[in-house]
Image (cartoon, rainbow, N blue to C red; front, side, top):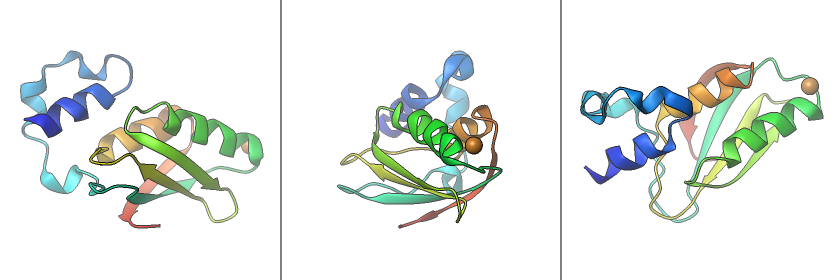
Length: 112
Ligand SMILES: [Cu+2]
């Protein structure tokens, strides 16, 4: 149950307006696997062209309470998302952040 509370708490805007029970049906593969101290997720992002793009994505990722820090590499089209200890970030949440920043989310991988 805790993981879904974190999941809901980390969603942007009113995405959590639909009740958390719906989140229980989220496939486990939709959950980013960052669980340990300082664990890192790599997100692939299309459409970033300059440092301003990187700054936008970095800032929006770092607004997430579970995110310790984020580093964006425009040339490689990736973001390294460093999680706080024991914090989770759902893939759908990452996708939402990237999409709302006006870039294209291309997936995640565990590790950086
Ligand atoms: Cu830019």
